[in-house]
Image (cartoon, rainbow, N blue to C red; front, side, top):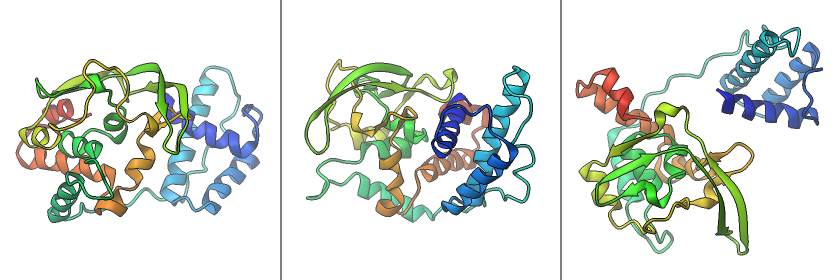
Length: 254
């Protein structure tokens, strides 16, 4: 929730030109809503952003930070996101084959895609893994929050040193999960540095919101014909069809 507030408030602050947002008026809130629509955001996304800001202002009222909620009522007539059917299973199988194949253009398998595919974890959970989080001997993957000063080479040359933070959605998401045999066979050649607590893909970190893998995962549709969240939905749907109870599914997926 706090991460969601931070992301939307940062977007609002950038539009407003200042981090001091307590003096915003209802008229400015309407202008920001219009701005989001003009920028090409889907109406369901605008509804989500306004809803998050609405919840934050309610929190501000409860804590005597602001007096009125300028976002109240601005979600009216904004639609929810349309529920779409999952792509056919054949597309998922082709995407899995492609992600696990090395080509002259791609020198390494798309390990993050494969981990998402078989564990149903979120994109940030997969892309923010450290070398020490994957244990190929025990066939386990540990999803854990961490922060560290990381040094790495930029994609186009030059070194960078920055503090990187890996957050999970909640403390309950910190867990160690077993690999399926299928996942192990696909990632057993993964070039891991034994004992290293450095992130595997440090260049996939986004400093402004402490997120991981946003740009990488956004290319899934173009590369594979599926979205990152489709991988999670595929796995959850399969577990449900196999008769696994929702309580067990909740414990399995992140």
